[in-house]
Length: 508
Image 1 (spheres, rainbow, N blue to C red):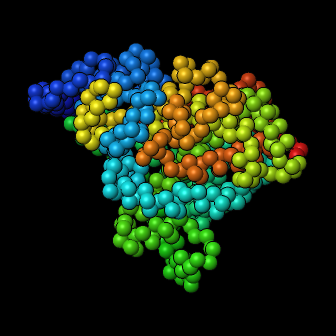
Image 2: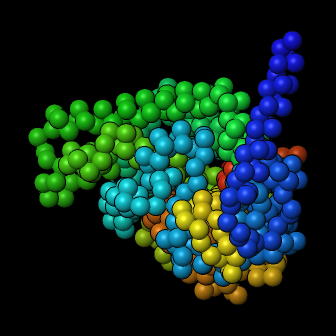
Image 3: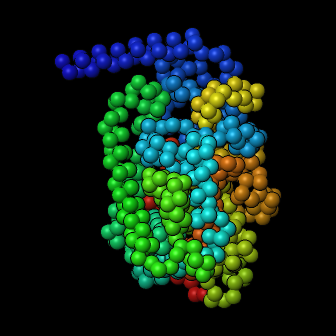
C-alpha cells in the first residue's frame, strides 16, 4: 500500500512538473542559446549526461559542442566556457554581469544563505565582506607578519618525519599531517592558536567535521534538488544532516571566537595601539562587528570561509605535489639541485628565499596546472539576462569556466598530460599564477578571484621546499608509482586514495 501511494505521489509530482514546464515555456522569452544536446521536458539533459559533470567530462563535451555550450539540467541552465577568450569575457570584461553566485540547497546551508563572502551574491554585502576580510588576511603585509610561523610549522613536520622510523622505510601517509600543518598555519593567523598534534581532541573534532562538510558539499547526491526544485522534499534527510554538521562546525568556531573575546576583554593593550604588535585576524573582524558593519553570523561565516578556502585547497595541492615528485624523480633531483646551489649549505629555505628559486615556483605552477584544486573555479551566475559570444544567457544561469581544460588543452599547451615544470622556464616562462594569461587561471581572475593567493603561494613554497631539502621523496617498496587517480566533486579535485610515501633523510 505504501509503495502504491509513493508511486501515485511521484506520478503526481511528475505531472505537475510537466505542466509547470509547459506553462513556463509558453511565457518564456525566445533566446538564442549556446549549442548543446537537445533537452527533454522536466529533466532537460540530466538523464543524458548524468550527475558527474567533472572537468574531464565537460572537456569532452566542449570538443563536441564548442568553446561555449549549454546543458539544461532540470530547470537550471548550466553554461560551460572552455576558451581563454570567453573566460576573460566572463571573469573580467563582463565581471559585473557574471559576478554573482548560483544558489544551491546545500551551499545555502554552509554559507548561512549567503552571509559569507565566497557564496554571497554580487553587491553591497559582498563588497563589504571582501573589504573587511582583506586587511587581516589578503594583503601583502600578511606574508612578513606570518612567514616565520609558516617556517616553524614546516620545520616541525620535517622533524616529525625524521623521528618516525616508518617514514624512511615503508612510508607514511601525509594527508592528515598536511591538514594539521594547514590548520595550524591558518588558525595562527585567525586566532593566534595552534593544535598540539594529530591527536589533539579539538583538532580531531574540527578535522572530522571539515571532512564531513566537504563530503556533503561536494557530493553529487543532491543535484536533483537543485535541478528540479519540486523534488526537494525528498532531500529532507540529507539537508538535515547538512544543517546538523554546519551547526556543529559553527559551535567549534564560536569556541575560538569567544576565547579570543575573553583575551581582548582581559587585555590592557588596545588592538590598535600602534606599538608594532601583531594581532590575529579575528580582532579586525570583531572590530568591524563592534562598529555595526557586520553581525555575529557574518563573523562566524568569515571564519568558515577562511577555514575552508585557506586549509582545504592548499592541503590538496601539497598532496598532489608530493605525489608528482615521488613519481618524477628527475624533477625532484633538479629541484634539490636548485635548493642546494642557491641556498648556503645547511640553511633551510625561508620565505625571502622563495623569490630566487625559479624551479621551485615552476614545480608549484605545474602542480596547479595539471592538478588544479578547483578545476571549474567556483561557479558564477548572471542575475539578469546577458550576452556571451553572441548568444543569449538567461538570467540566473550557472556559468562554469573549465579552468583545468584551459590549462590542459593540447591546442594551447605542449604535451599537457606530462608533469613538466620546465615548461614554465621555457616556452611558457611569461605565464604567472595571477592570471596574466587566461590559459592559466588556477586562482581565478577578476572580482571573484581567490584572494588567498597572497598566503597560499608562500606557504606552498616553504612547505614543499623544506620537504625536498630534507628528504628524498620516494615511492614505497613494492610499488611502481603513487596512484594519482582523481576524484572530482561539485567543483573540486583531489587524489582518490590517500597514499603512503617514503621520506628518506638527506644530509644537508
